[in-house]
Length: 287
Image (cartoon, rainbow, N blue to C red; front, side):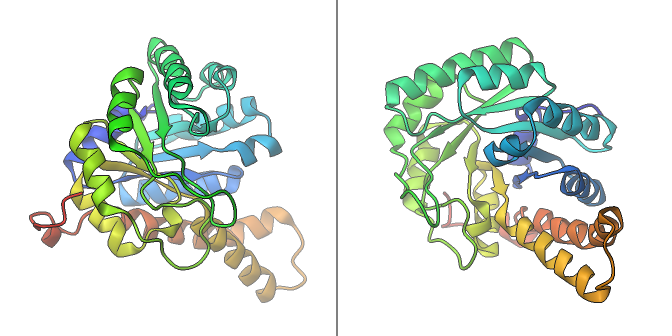
């Protein structure tokens, strides 16, 4: 199976009332576990290299490593630059094997965000790849506050940029470690009503299981990013392995022992991103 783009996997997800997981990768071991889990569940997955990962390992290595996993997988795998911080960084990612780039101009004035995102989208499309943008600002659990997406601005952004996916701010926050956020369902419904672009929820670790199924059932949100939740699973697996054998020191042996736990946690996440069959015809919760 060759590597895929957002434009290839998100429409099918929308039609099937499920979301595709954008999984934040920090290294080879978790990225490999995410692909193994997606293959076991028979679903597409998006491997994401975010700013933290790129600070720890150069962009070209991320592109080649994730593309290697994608090209060998039996399910569609998108190799995605998450929160690209400049047009030039997105250009570099396109040249290094990424199949999708996100340009994050959410902190900029609307006109600048539109212009820069449109430039990245045109560049990605010219290369046969996909582009995600963000309108509104998704804040952080212990940092900058969110700025909710304005539906009228979202409609303008979607039309003017030509993005394949649009990240929105509807109560979701990055890096939520405990509890669940209260999503702004009316705002999400208003955004969905004025644009047909697949929507993206960042900060998916803060979304409850019930709300994930509700998002999938509604259909407009086709991609949800999960990072913190699986990093917590990674930490729990590491503590379990070392507690079981305090003398264990070889990092490869430790990684092998942790792998089943990470795969199992990822499979549970992936299974929770589809509307339950009984929900498919449910009324009154359209978002």
